[in-house]
Length: 292
Ligand code: ADP
Ligand code: MG
Image (cartoon, rainbow, N blue to C red):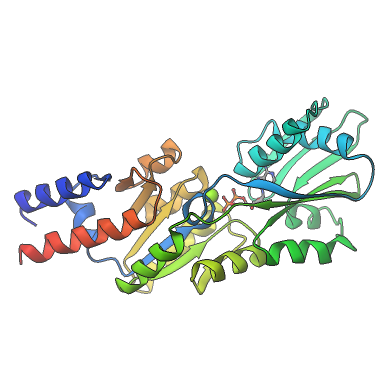
């Protein structure tokens, strides 16, 4: 692209709230064949809320005191949902020690009576050989409704499970359809479990998705597609998306995302909508075809 047409394209995009880093990002955006989207905070609003709380042992207030203590130290969006739920009920967090945040799993600590606390997904419990038992059926039901399930175990027993809903952004279904109509293969990646991922993917109209991914898995998936000849765009909002964003041919950061995500991206969307990506791609194609 000539410097002038590039400037025009970058300016046009800026009018739509799309910040394009340089001419290279603009040019590559016009050639993308695959777009990878992170689920949480990209397809969804990223403001999860607790919809179901099932206490299997003990009093709800005691259970929530543990949950509040554990999630106080976490920056995960699910932590905010659980903390909000406890705060609405005026629950005081108990005192815990040896807090550990386990990437892609949840959080652990030692409780006030020396008990081992684990709060997180099924993998976190599985790795401690804690079985779900009767609760598994309820968990599957919640996941089929696109809820993420967070489990609380005390020592070797499951004591509570929480269904957490993170609704799709109002325009995600339409934006995915538009990107697909633009000829892009749209793939959803998520650290969330396979059941919830399947429900969200179906709801939003994506049939290609991978679940249970760690940040390095997202990065590896981008690389795998690139080796297969795809020109890959990637969008995500979290710290865990940064390695994949940096690896992608074009990274799209969501304006309200973390600074790390924005630094790793070639294109930043000021509005938190996937329509911004379709806008960016369509503007880049128009800019590039004008100068041929
Ligand atoms: P994603 O942002 O795609 O959900 P993460 O790697 O951040 O990916 O998280 C993967 C999964 O780990 C979450 O879906 C959740 O099940 C679990 N998890 C991580 N942190 C927490 C936490 N603080 N509390 C509860 N669950 C958590
Ligand atoms: Mg995320």
